[in-house]
Amino acid sequence: MTARGWALFAAMSVIWGIPYLLIKVAVDEVSVPVLVFTRSAIGAVLLLPMALSRQARTLLRRHWKAVAGFAFFEMIAAWLLLSDAERHLTSSLTGLLIAAAPIIAAVLDRLTGGERLGPLRMAGLGIGLAGVAVLAGPGLSAGGAWPVIEVLLTATCYAIAPLIAARYLADVPGPALTSACLGLAALMYLTPAALTWPRHVLTPHAYLAIGTLAALCTALAFVVFFALIREVGATRALLFTYVNPAVALVAGVLVLREPLTWLHISGLVLILTGSVLASRVGAQKPSGVSSEDVADEEPTGDVDVG
Image 1 (cartoon, helix red, strand yellow):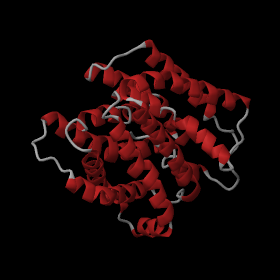
Image 2 (image 1 turned 30 degrees about the vertical axis):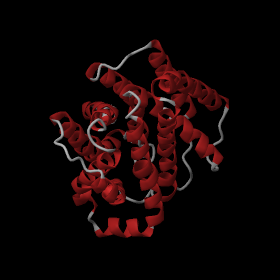
Image 3 (image 1 turned 180 degrees about the vertical axis):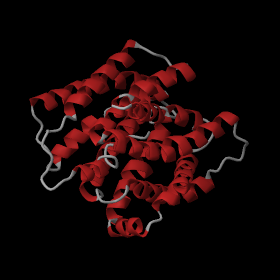
Image 4 (image 1 turned 30 degrees about the horizontal axis):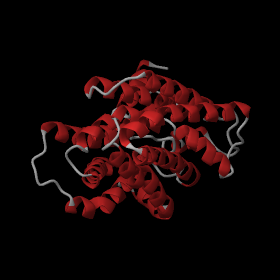
């Protein structure tokens, strides 16, 4: 990997590892609909210049049902559940539980006619689920069952969205898809956000968290992500998703002084080990699929933005 590739890889590891920290800060001062709306609206506006081509608009109209489905699972439902859960759970625990998404994705892919799960991948599922169980215990004690369920439902949303993108949206440019989905999410949350808009002046920390989440972790993140794909290829690029949970853990502990226990570390190791094994894919690519198709397909697939 080149120096530029490593720099982009490190950037993505951090950019999509800190949203959990930022969400935790923001939901202390604004409602969940306000947070989801501002994140979506700002991100959509910033990415709009990259999604104005006639070809992109044509493809979005042609696949509008899949675009709506992707937006629902990747942003509209996922960000609502995630932000609400973080009103009760620590950001570090949330980031660790979200790491179960690749495991859930492997199961859903198999159930919907995807690649068969061999013994190694089945073992990965078991190991990963054991890690989720290790982490869910402290979560249930700290915030109750529903916030933990919300995070696991978010991980399920992040697992479903890749299947939609890979099977129906492979020919849609990433920035155009992202901008359209963010715009749709902003429209969905416009009224709830207006009804719950804060009447008090926010602290600088809240403004910084919301602005960083929208501009850095949403808009810029996708630009860097696609640059990383072009630099190192889709397969290597997606390896950063295994670093994000560790970044979320470290950020929560250092910035918010959240507790760090052996259960956190053990759960992280188990989930990441299980994810690596469960998400292994065969060396053979489907016939008729070029490397460019794969590069277009995977970025809009296994995307966990928090």
